[in-house]
Image 1 (cartoon, rainbow, N blue to C red):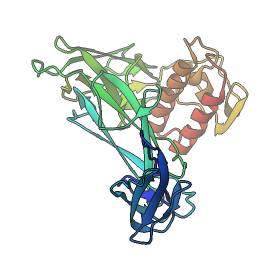
Image 2 (cartoon, rainbow, N blue to C red):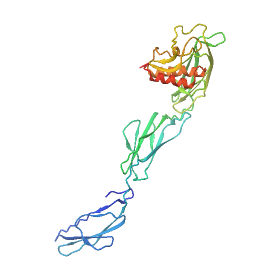
Image 3 (cartoon, rainbow, N blue to C red):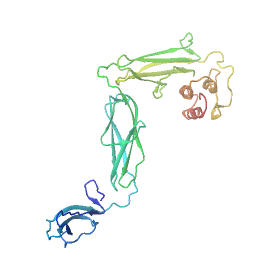
Image 4 (cartoon, rainbow, N blue to C red):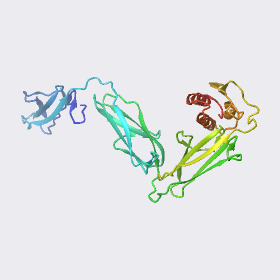
Length: 353
């Protein structure tokens, strides 16, 4: 019969008795349940009363010889009520982390599942979109890179939980590498006599690490959150700007945060003589409804976004728009809410595709 994790029979147990005699042959087989009277055995005996049971049995051959009584002891439990609730499942990532939250050397994922009704049957997991495998012990992931571990659980009633997941990054462990990366930063552009950058300033960052290698280079513009650095930053909004930057290597060492502060001033001439003077910021066919104002040097917001420029892909264009709008927010030309509407229009556009 069906058994639970403790070996009890769920709902009922069936006892099958067999007897053989090589001489005169078997005449009768009898059984006795829980101390009752012996009775003839003709078919398997099903016991569905909850509790512990003892079934004794014996056989007699055609010469009148009777075997010693044998016995089996077992327990029947009540079947679980109808269970339509899936198990609860969760995962936790543990391990040594660096300042960026990356796991150094390896990360261990522990999956926990519970089911208060019919009980757990199986738990399965998959790494980085691979096939699902039975979960029997915590999962150790040591390959450097970004990872996602997905998991699900099924109970004894056949209910399966929704797939849950945890995502994390593992960086290589280098016990000999305790030196942080070296980061260089440079501002370029046309300058006036006071050192201000006229029209625009370009910030170029680079990082190197002779030990475990550079894992990430990030920057923050005018007090914003740190963002991965991919391409030089071109700032055109007039005003003072501050760029913070730092790098992390594959051993988890983080450089000190460096900074550059500089000022961009509007050029004396109109930087955009053929300005896009539409009333609102429009990208492709997507109207952000944000006013397309002059940013101070004769260029409107649409001019700075430059939807007709050349971009390697759509992501590069969206990143360019983010840099432009970050600077406009920092200079008080647009609000965070207006930036969000412009970014939404950029994301929905086909520019760069």
